[in-house]
Length: 115
Length: 113
Image (cartoon, rainbow over all chains, first blue to last red; front, top):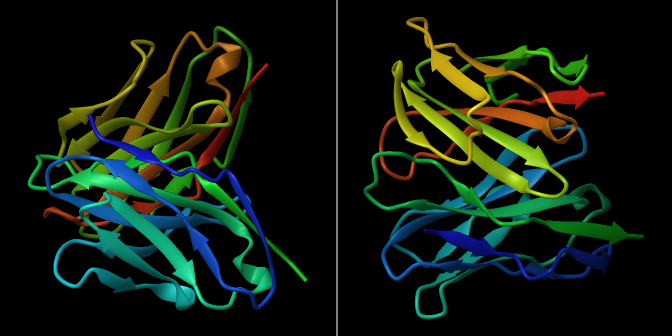
C-alpha cells in the first residue's frame, strides 16, 4: 500500500527566509504526487501536482517542488516566505493508472512563519 | 472557492445517534470522495464514488455508509456514533482521468458528546 512520510511536523521560519518542506513516498512504481495547503478552518487547496515530464513543478503562491524518483521524494520549496504562508501543508500520492484517484496523505507539516 | 459544497458546517450530537452529511460536487465532476480528518489519525480516505457506483473503499467503519445520487450529490451516513467519531469530514470531487486533482469542500465539523 502507498504511504507518504512528512518527517517534520512543524517548521518554524522567519519571514522572507527560504523554506523546504520534506516529503517521501513509498512506491517502486509510477505515482502522481501532490501538495495541498490547509489554512485554519478551511478545506484543502491544491498547491501543485506532478504527473509526468519535468521534475521541477511550479505551483501557486510562489511554491515549487522537485520530483526525485531515485530518492522517492517530492520536497516543497519557497525562496521567500510571508506571514500569510502560515498553514498546514500536506503531501499526497495517488496510483498511476488506477481505477481511483484517491489520495493518500502524509501527516502534514505546520509551517509557522514568524516576523 | 473550490465549488464543492458541504452541509452542515457544524454538527453536535450525542453518542448513539445517527447523522447525515451532505456534499455537492463541482459542476461536471462525476467522482466524489470522503475523508475524515482527526488529530490522532490525520487525513484518512473513507470512500470514493463515481457516477453513482462505489469505486474504492478505505478505512470506513461498518457503522458508516455513503451513497451518490443520480444528481451526483453524495451523503455520508454515520450511525451509532461514538466520542471517537468526532472529527472534520471532508468531501472532494474530481473529473475522471489519471492524476486528476481532488477539489475539497470546507468540511463538516462533527462533535459527538
